[in-house]
Image (cartoon, rainbow, N blue to C red; front, side):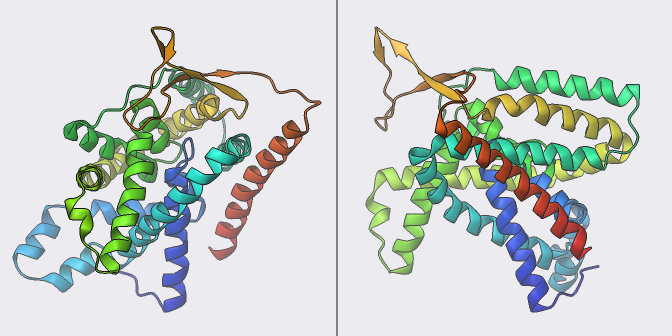
Length: 335
């Protein structure tokens, strides 16, 4: 049954969607964790599970009002609207700050992940040998993935569709960062930066009744990419929510233990102090089609304590931790 909400509740829900969308965009941070902390994770999964055969029968029978009520559509639309709005705004801001203040951005992300680990672990209940074993397994998996060499960018539409399924996993599974996985698949910049920025520009052109983008093959290319990625994301939301609901119901403690271990091990990917290793061929750095130098991996190092930037970075780590703790406090206060 769909819950009736007043304007203030809808506005708060939209703001929660913005936060979740921002988290999904950040490599290493899970939007599912944010929804868990803010107290709407279970309703999110429940709503996506309602997109099933019964829902389609209601549409086919012309019972639109019953369909909207059955699928909790008001909640879903508000959350998704907030997330979509966040993607357009955060994409531009993130691009700017990563170019100009990369160390501090990664430090902030690093702190947010540490805060997320604390939040999930504190509600884990009593620890047992079995749980510890699965945490260790999760850590090993996370560490293994963290040090994988990112794949090359791949704009094959079938692969982009699969990326959509994987990329949306961060929204449905606390602790798993879909954007982090997209980095490993080589398509993070293509799908969550370049395509989103182009789409944002096209929307502005449409609103000003300028349709010149239809003659621009580059913009059409990116619109095709973002369209297929969105379709994959929609398919992933529905299918993963059904699978996740079943898995969490049967093996909740085991899955949670693996999640805690996984995000702990994956801290390596957002370690702030790292240098880019550019791909070299024929003693020259490889340049992609957009004129960017291709990054093959990162060389991590221990920071210099005597460097003032190190202390600023540490400050941002604590700022990231504080943000998650504040979200946790807010979530408990409004329950």
